[in-house]
Length: 87
Image (cartoon, rainbow, N blue to C red; front, top):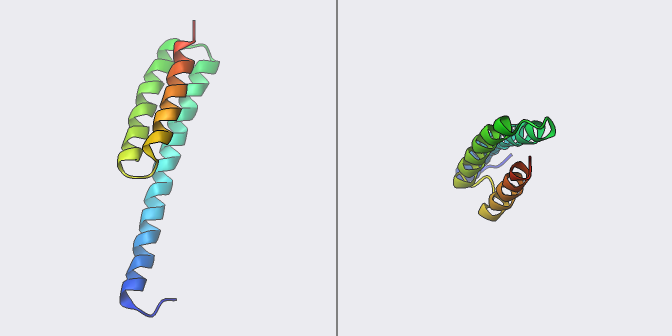
């Protein structure tokens, strides 16, 4: 355990931030799974609705610094392309 007050604080802050990031990442993964589940079920309306939710969740995660903007952009692009490819 750290002895210096600032080091103790950094440990607490980093644990809190890691917990927050974990929660955000979990929510994003769930929303992405819903998009691909709708694609597999051939339900275009549900896929588009899920895509909107997933895009919003990923953009929020990016603004919080959980994901890099290029990562989000790439994943959103691939999901959008997959949804648009549906008949």
